[in-house]
Length: 71
Image 1 (cartoon, rainbow, N blue to C red):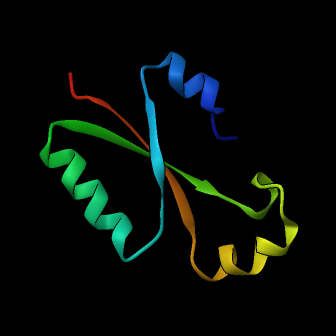
Image 2: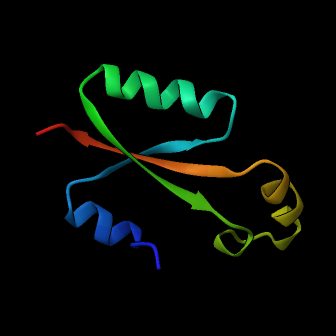
Image 3: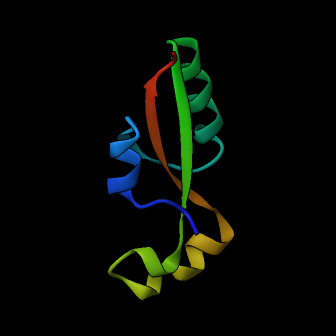
């Protein structure tokens, strides 16, 4: 079971935005280069208000990007 957004915020994570490949890897690399730890949460069809989105989420996984300053 993945943590909720509230749980992540309590742990110091800050939501930035959602992304999928090929840009996801670029964003992760850039945040790490800037000194952030990066946590990704996959967004599934059940996570949004529109069930018709399930096909695109299966073909190209989308992730919420959370960051926090490295210790």
